[in-house]
Image (cartoon, rainbow, N blue to C red):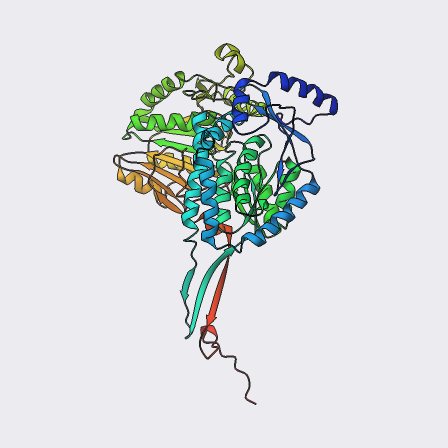
Length: 570
């Protein structure tokens, strides 16, 4: 269990109650009170919702990574409560599937409005974004942007609710038609990660709902307040429409709860976001019971900068890609390949950008670097740095935890680390510093001569989420997006006049860089990233069950392929 999620005995709880009541900071209190969380943080918050709020399991603590302040105490569910919640989710599905898709879309539209409209002087989007900054640690503008992703996918899903079409297939038999028909699938279990505590659930919920499914969300146990705040908003919409709350249920729990959901025959589709190691086990279990699975796993993303690139465009994209969210995005730029002719110039400019950044409170506008999420993340960062030093890599900048003197007093205990640029001695992509994803702001750099070499390095790692190339040469673009190019699920390109983002399932013009995705195209990666696709494009087709329906409207019953199997004459 994560270090921020302590199980407390009775005496520890009493002491903690006293300390929390006395010491909850005004920055935390302001954010929590705006979302109707109790300011008396000795009160436990129920973490199970299936039409009613409850929870009688262990208490988990939500810890602010900027200050290590306990900001909430959440009562998780028990195994029996999980089974009861799964049963209620199945019952809710049986009712919800009967609503016409456009009616389901209307529910999603109301959820969208509830997330974005001003209520009693409060804009939920802004307040939820602040909660993401408080509990997860990403800077406020990124937190607000994450909530905006939820709003955007709701917009997309509302339109989709009138366009989830099947197909009419021509039949070889006279008087016959074949229909490919999508129908609701059942119960969708969403197991989300800490780094996007709002958006990933939004991607799944909006599409799942218009498809006619019921959804049970098990969030990361280190970001329970975000999930509770979102579920409150969604549940109000369902209640106002006379619909069962278990259509969008919530279950806060630990590893055991996640395993039970993955193993449950009641869950038709599992959408899992997390590490490659855990994803591999999740995939085996779900496949073993013939369930459906969407995996969003590791991303070891590369940015390739060619000598003909516009460096004024490439530099800020690489900088944000590597430093944004303190290196804790699945699409974070972790590998940078620079063509030799511009390598020294580009690295010098990138170092200057790194020197300009200072750590700060994610809730304050203008902060660009927040903390890592947990103490364990600090260990991952330090271990990766130690490996680089042991392998004789040149660390150009960073490589240390920020000392208290670089932080405001109230942030001195936060999980702040220095963004790091390193040049490993080896360019062998099989070496650990290149092939392993480290969830921290560490950028490894290599210099190449020919574009084919950089593409080979890009493709040589196990992961295949996001990648980008910077060039003005249309020939490089063709090579990059073609059969000899990037093998990632997201293939970004920049040429002189246009921005491209190409995915396995869709094409969308956007800004480039490995980070930053719009909801219109399907999001996901290949290889050990899991092959999952969420959000836009054709991702919705995973949330339905498909049937090929042959209809005979003739007076005969011929067999296909000209087969004759007539009854003997009497």
